[in-house]
View 1 (cartoon, rainbow over the protein chains, first blue to last red):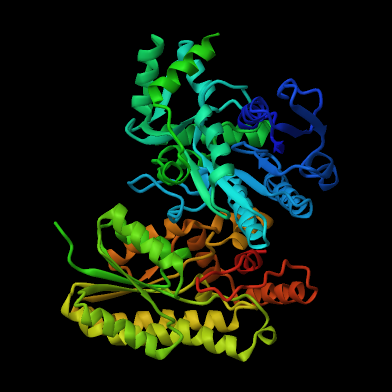
View 2 (cartoon, rainbow over the protein chains, first blue to last red):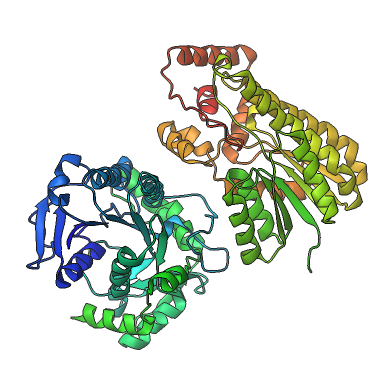
Length: 325
Length: 289
């Protein structure tokens, strides 16, 4: 089958394109930089130069494709130019949806984030749960807008699926500095881990192989117009780092940092940004993001699609092994 | 201790009403949520019940219709839900020149913002007295303090709510029913508002608050039996400055605002007739220019 994958130079898209190619599909990838070292290499992968924000560059890669996996997005906590999030995440998605409708694509899968669903007041959140706090960053907000648009196109007759990922970890290319992988790597190499206090705050971590399988399963078995959480285990920050310590044998410490410290750090970063223009690593609003429970349930995907979770120990073991190489 | 009392919130399915519902639930109050028919109300009710372990009753009503207001009371009374907190939040916001709005829209706005608040308060006041100490929170707006172009009817309904609350407070205090009015400024309650948020100046942006933040302040104020609750330091500052400015400067500002409106250089946002009290940005940006 001929399939288009956007975002193939990203962590998820890269692994997805490779897996689809290995399964014997003709995979077309749309990339901005033809010289990027992150482009997946495989005899079944054809590379097209283009950009989702430029609609004219899309058809060449899309024509003849039965399925589209749209994993491309601007993933960042902060950008000097906030309109960039809108341009890439919302308008880029719209361009693809329009082209998909025009080119009679059979199925369109949009890779989104559990961040759209948001933090939990207690129990793991599922697909239909209402959001309990306002959006506080452009990334999640524009992904929310894009999801809304995908649903609109479902109404126009396009077969759409949305998958929501939590914090993805596991072997694969390194694409951004705040990823779970880079946190694990630094910790394993002996750097102290700073985690939010209380360390019982929990988040959801999904293993990359599960996420890739989940994408393919959703495309094959998902119901049109539906959304599926492709998550992993919910685990507290404290337990997570303790597990990594046990598995890797690192001597690095784990320090629980009170919220106020991080808020002050964010303020310092903001001041530095104001004076030097260097993009902050933490923002005031991002602090709120960290000091809450981000736990999710993948029940729906497990029940309806046969999605399976790799136990976190096994996933971490393989990740540590990969990162040590 | 298990709380057997109930808090009734109107317009509870989205925006500020939803934030109030979540805030009350986190304080272990049982809830009666009233909103227009729709899936959101029921999923919110089920979600709150699961996560906060409180009883939640969802009533689908259109409070612009008198009979629906009566039905709210009848259903609550029939189910014998002891309500000791009434939050009149349902409302329709608008930002438009008077001639741009149709008469049916204004009727609906007045019915919901002013009449439904009066009606529900009247219906529930005896029950509140019986279950005292009880609380009534009416949702006004910072708008009640400024006379703004494009906010004629909306501002008037909110002034009504303000006057009604303060006056009623004096009547009911001895009966252990405490009436408060909250006057929020702009809130990030929906997408378009978030977008305007980006387009206005720094000081106005600072005045924007998240609904969950305003909800927490409102509940704190209500339980402390405050008469008027103004959430946010920046909003309090605006109000303070407003009280200092002499009349002729305010008139100059208003004239300036009208000129800007006539020249159509402001960003025009068509207000959807949704049911959240909201105030668009021009308010304070122009007040303080």
